[in-house]
Amino acid sequence: MKASWAQQAWATRRSMEIHEAARKNLDQRQVKTIWISLLFCIAGGVVMALVGFAVTRPLKRISTDMLQMAKLEFLSGQADMDDDDCELKGHSHRYFSIRGITRALSNLTSRSRSRTRTRFSSRRSQRTEDSIGLTRTNPTDPSSSSDTSQDERSQYEETRHDHTEREQDFETGEELSACFRLSTPKEVVDMRESFIYMVTGLKSFARYLDPDIMRMVVKSRRQAQLGMGKAEVTIFFSDIANFTTMAESLEPEVFMSMLTEYLDEMSKLIMSKQGVVGEFIGDAIMAWWNVPIDLGQEHTAMALDAALAQQNRLVELRETWHLQRLPDVRVRMGLVKGNVLAGNIGSSQRMKYGLVGDSVNLASRLEGLCKYYGVSIIIEQDAAFAPGVQSRFQLRLLDLVIVKGRTQPTELYQLVCEKAVLPEAFDSPEDLQFFIDAYSQIHRLYRLKSFDACASALHHYRQRLPDDVPSKMLLRRVETLLGEGVPADWTPVHILTEK
Image (cartoon, rainbow, N blue to C red):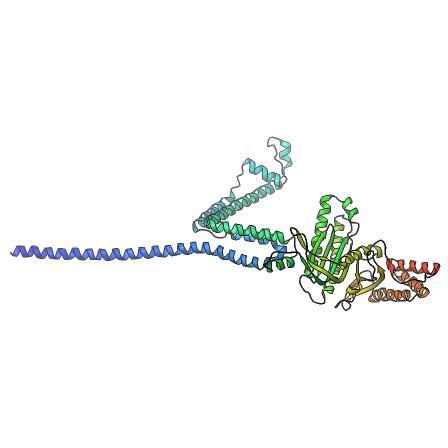
C-alpha cells in the first residue's frame, strides 16, 4: 500500500506538471495567435488604405476636374492649354505600388553606379556621333588619326557620357511610368483617360470660339438656337496693307509663320482688353466689345485702347521682322460705335455667333478709308464722343463724307494717341496740339465757305506737315472750288464713290 500511495502521488505530481506545461504552452500560443492576428489586421488595413487611396484619389481628381470643366474655369488660361493637358495625363499615372517603386529605385541605383562605364554598341555609338557632328575615322589611316586632336577626343567622350546618362534616365522614367500605370485600377485609368480626351476635345473646340461666347452657351443649359437681339457695340476691323504683294514675295512657310505670329499677338491684345475676336478673314480681324458681356458705357474706350495697343505692338514686331529680313507690316483699322443685331446666325445645322447691321459694314468701310487718307486708325463721330473717349484720347477731325452704300454723312476722326503719350512723329506736345487743333480750324473755315482763308491756313499747315495726306486732299478741293467756282448746291460733305 505504501508503494501504491507513493506511485499515485508521483503520478499526481507528474499530471500536474504536464497540465501546467500544457497551460503555459496554450497561453503562449494564444498570445502568439493574437499578435499574428493583429499584424494581419494592421497589414490588411494598410493594404486596404493604399488600395482605397489609389482608387479614391484619382476619382476625387476626376470629380474636381469635372466640376471645373462644368464651370468652364479652364477657359481663363487658354495660353497654357498644352501644359494643362500634360498635367492631366500625368495625374493618371501618379499612383503606384511599393513594389514598383522599389524595383524602379533599385534599377535607378544600379544604373547610377554603372554610369562610369561608357560602353556603347555600334548602333548607339553611331547615333551619338552623328548627333554631335563627328565622323568615324579609320584607325588604320594615319592621316585621319593625326587630324583628330586630344581635345576633340575628350569632348567626344564627354558627349557620349552625357548621351548615356540621358538614355538611362529616360529608360528609368519609362519604368516608373509603367509601374504607375500597373498599380492603378484599370477602370479608374480608363475613366481618367476618357475624361482627358473629353477635356482635350473641349479645349480644342474652345479655340474656335471666344471663351465668353462658349461660357454663355454652356451655362445656358440649352441647345443653341437661331436668334438675335439688339445691342449697342463697338465694332473693330483691321487689315494688313499690301497683303497680296507680301504673300507673293515670301515663301509660303515664312509667310504663314509671320501671319500666324501677327494674328496671335493681335488677338491676345484684343482679348486682354475684354474684346471678342469674332472672325479671322484671311489677314483681316473682326472684333467687337459689349456683347455678349455687358462692359458698361466705356466699351468704346476699351476698343480704342486695344487698337492703339495693337499698333504699339506692331512697332516691336516690325523691328523683329526687320532683323529677319522680312517686309514691314502696316495695319489699317476702323472702329464704329452703333446698334446691331447680335446672336446666333446661320442655318439649323450650322450656325455662329455674330453681328448684323449697318454699323458692321461701316466699320469695314472705315478700315478701307485708312488707305485713302493715309492714316492708321479711323473712327466715326459716335465713337469719338462716346463716354470716356474725349478725356483719354487725342483725336483729329479728318473729313465729313458719305461712304459708298450709305445716304447719311459720317464725320471721320483719326485716332492719334492717348493724351498722356507723345508719338514719335512729333517733337513736342505743342506740335501735336497744332496737328490736331489747326486742322480742326481749317475744317471749320472750309464748312463756312471761307475758302481763301482756308487755303491760306492749309498752305501754312502743309509747310509744317508736308507729308500729311488729308490736308493735301483738302487743299486740292479748295483750289478746285477757287478756280472753278462754288456750285449753288455745294455742301461740305464729300461723297466717296470708291470706298
